[in-house]
Image (cartoon, rainbow, N blue to C red; front, side):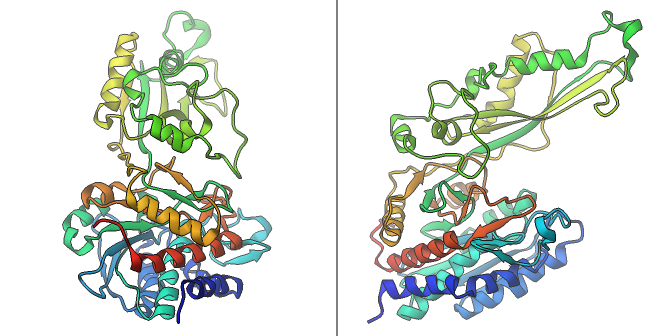
Length: 458
């Protein structure tokens, strides 16, 4: 009799025997850089020649849609019985620029190369390796049991790295096609490489520019110093009213109301920052743990400052200064009031001369109740396969387009990441760990096996 363990072992063997590296190599070789002008052909190529053959072998019916606002979008459907539960799988096939010539040891970003436990290549972690694992895991269950025991729909976009332009409209116009009981997808890192992570949404983000424009050109600082207002001084003093010296937010409307005792309890023992920079001591909101600051609270950052000529400073008072800023925010923040609240705050502090401008609206924050049955079901399945307690997050610290599924389609959203914090995504030397990939393939095979015995209210 076919068993759950047989499907899991097939997934582990696929990674250990080199199948994962070979399959991933074919996907990475397609230069689907959505940030590169003229990449449309490569984006179609990724869907047509990279993903469609995998879906065909699994018995999906697929369609590739042109997207007037961005890269093409693939949808696929595999229905065993309309009475069975249906899950939706998401991934993105586009990658950031390859940054050829900047990788260690002369590595080609579009050739998968192995070094010990690492597989290097653009898209290995973000996101080709992750949705490849999920699609192949479906195959291991199907081959072992002969059927899935549930229905699957799939959407792969190719514009995530440029803001998922057009995805919201596409989802809105294809609600019936994509309707499902829940989303199960993968993106982002685990909190620790050897422990599976589940998260259910993401922090939102709004980017904006603060600028002080006083006059054209610059004026000699000897002749005009003490007579002309300095825009950089005005701007930096305005910035200093937004947070205190340790980065704690001082605008009341920017302080969320959603860090409840239940969320605090969920976050209290979770590790953060693994594989990245050393955490700054005494930074951020006082009284919060590091996990609470990044997953349960809002954070303000100055991304760039522009004033004068930094590479060749002149003895002159510049007429203009600007700062590119960002607020990352959780559920419990009124996103429509973020910039109006900032305007009121600056005006109240005497900085009416500071202009606020945003290129686009806020990317919304989302979060599924961690007590939702889908969260418990997923965590229990992954724990059974891994033999270890699973990390459960209310939301990712960064942003993913989860709102199109949680809000537009109105479904529970479950994310199971297959990478780790030190994967160097978006930079040279992007890689996945074979050990994590094997654990992920086993975990997803077990999860998909268990879906046939789903005991979650539909």
